[in-house]
Image (cartoon, rainbow, N blue to C red; front, side, top):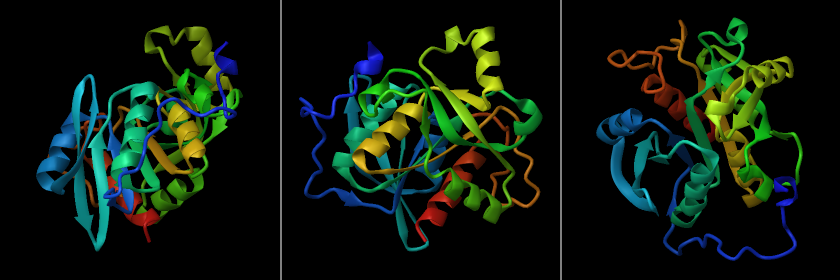
Length: 252
């Protein structure tokens, strides 16, 4: 059974090995949007500092220099296995302990999450990856939710705290399961959070995660948003600006 998969008594057959010349950065930002990646590469990146490889091709890792700090940035793929795999690979290329994961998610409770950043506090483990990094349990705690909340408060960004439902199969999000997870306090559904948190816990890394729904973020106090691509969807570059503000906040 997948719930018996966690093994911390024998060594892994393959493990990432940090390079001697791993590039030191204050934090690494990870997006899922190819449009945000293009925007960052054009407007913010000063260079490419690494490449992550898989069968789908090369993933460039960009350097962002801002206020005397250095941040890495790259685009991952949808789903816990590849997202976790690329993060594992990044630990060989980067000298970094703080990772910011942001992207679109389904909203399970629009009455409280409409127009707000969704900050996960726990992730329901309806996927397989997390069971290889942590003992079996229904939920895994997203440890840095309070830090993410502090950043949103500081920057006047509307947010809501709640559990998230991490699934491997969006075509099998049935009505009964939707109602069950909503009743249990889940406000979002996505495909990576539980696996990424489990990996970060196992490797001694810090995860800072937030999600955005399809609705426009109405944030009257937040004035550092892009005006040209303000569509409120997954590709809204304003979400990157929020992630960058979070990177600066946790690097103080």
